[in-house]
Amino acid sequence: MTITKIKDPALKKLGDKVKYYREKRGYNRDRFAIEANVSKYYLYRLEYGNISPGVLRLKQIADFLNIKVHDLIDF
Image (cartoon, rainbow, N blue to C red; front, side, top):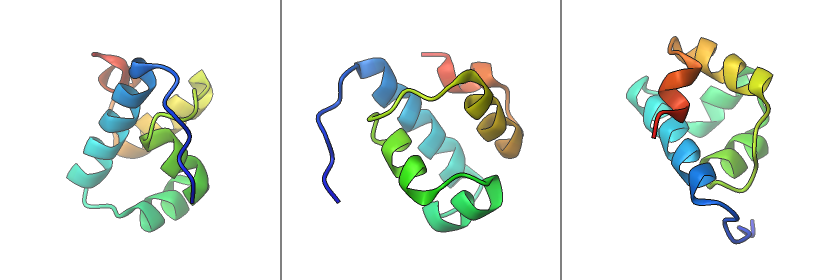
């Protein structure tokens, strides 16, 4: 899988937060993708800062992780 160059450092920080909380909750990428109802490829791109998720997708991920959207974007 090819990773494209990160366009914005804020997206990488967001991805790092998603990865941090995912790992803190004990999920590997595959299990998280299935249980949070997101594609593994989407999650991979999100964690590497290659996409800018919409508000509803961030809420879906935050709800699944039992955190607030603010926790993901507070950097």
